[in-house]
Length: 351
Image (cartoon, rainbow, N blue to C red; front, side, top):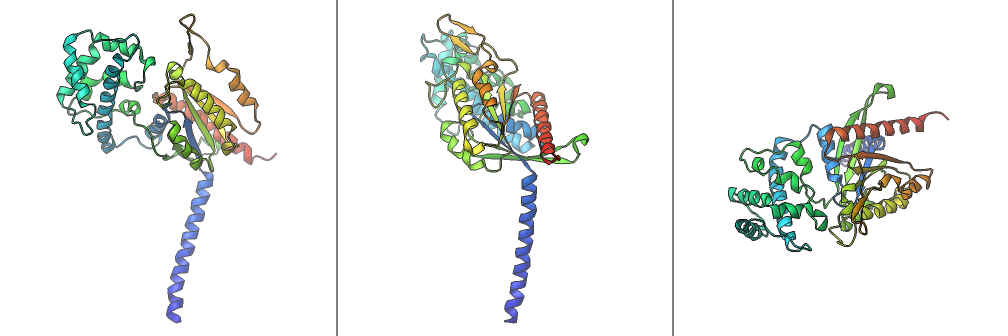
């Protein structure tokens, strides 16, 4: 009996220790600002997560940069493969301007299904020839008629640097590198609070979930306890179609999705930060009758302002930015941080 009591006491002490740790964790959890990044596929959510890494957690380690090399090279392969694959499908089709480049085209087609391709020097020679071909360049200018990755030009212009044995991806390379998000990602960081607002540090958690239609069922898993939603819209998709549905315009999908999120009961008390990628928006939709772009800024769309008026419990703040511009994102996040601090101060101020 005595031995039993001696055994249970350490167990109880251990249990109390765990309870205290949980209580402390919950206390910190409640003080943490939790952001949920939402938006359609390829709207820049993962890029924003990378920007937070650069701005608030010391950036990427040497090991992480080494691991990104293969992703960068795969982006090059995907970009050139999409370009040459689209040439014959376009109406009217495009053809290579230099018949000598057919060998390069056939080479890329032959390796496109190889999973563990080694990217020898031969590969880069063929890519350089194809990317320099006027027919491929004309195809690129018609990118709204097919679905290239948005970093295609960025990496194809850098093939000479990327092919070098000592190549290490820069921050910009990592920001432009595309890899589909298929699972929930989370980043934790702390930001210094200005002295005029009390000083100290504010903890942040930021969640990124896949934006393709098949990934959106996961969104509800991370809505609980969310402080604010950052909804991203890539305005560059004004004349592009969805990968999941080639009949649906990307910008229109974002508008519909924004409306669904805004009206959702799951985020009834959230603040929404609506970000559009590009600092200036005009010529959004192509007028098929006049065959020219009509300047119709998305900001003047009455539907958006209706969202602002639809609920007194929620506010919608707008920012125009470029997801790959670190300095710009830094300013945007500083504005968001100030907004959160001010809202917190208002919530504890005596009425």
